[in-house]
Amino acid sequence: EVYLVESGGGLVQPGESLRLSCTASGFTFSSYAMTWVRQAPGMGLAWVSGISVSHISLSGGDTHYADSVKGRFTISRDNSKNTVYLQMSSLRAEDAAVYYCAKSSSSSWNAAFDIWGQGTTVTVSS
Amino acid sequence: SYDLTQPPSVSVSPGQTASITCSGDKLGDEYAYWYQQKSGQSPVLVIYEDTKRPSGIPERFSGSNSGNTATLTISGTQPMDEADYYCQAWDRSTGVVFGGGTKLTVL
Image (cartoon, rainbow over the protein chains, first blue to last red):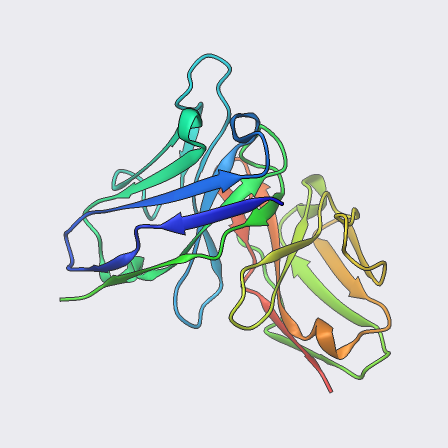
């Protein structure tokens, strides 16, 4: 069975940082790109960031970001731990959402997202 | 930035055919993907690369993509199909783009 389990969400104040983790099982993690998608309360899905596969480094390949998080969020992966991370800094109220980790159907970050985690909730409030 | 436009809501009677559209500039030049999200649950991929169904997705789900419009069609709609549906595509400058979502009501 293929699983993605997110963790690390919580309540933070504006300007603070948070690191989300997503641990995978049931597939060869190092062979697939991974992505983060968020959903604000009552709103639709919004892509946040993606990371492709690197055949050189264990820590992943190309990274890509939505304009709304560029310069504030950093995606990374540790293939030895089957885990992808999202380091979020300078958090704003508009970053509050459920954050989903999703597996790409290929080594490229811009393919279908065929497996999704259960999500972890980030609340940004003073 | 690149935008994908979906109708906010679509209603269908059980057993009838539901069609949900997704519009974007030259959308037909890229692959379109569709996700189903039931209330309180994570999204599920139902159509990929315009027309393909992942394993486990019923045959009543089908897709098409041409010109500026991609369409998700659910034939013989069942009450269990009631959900929010999102289209998704990729844009060279924007990255991954989702449509705003369509709430499908089966009544």
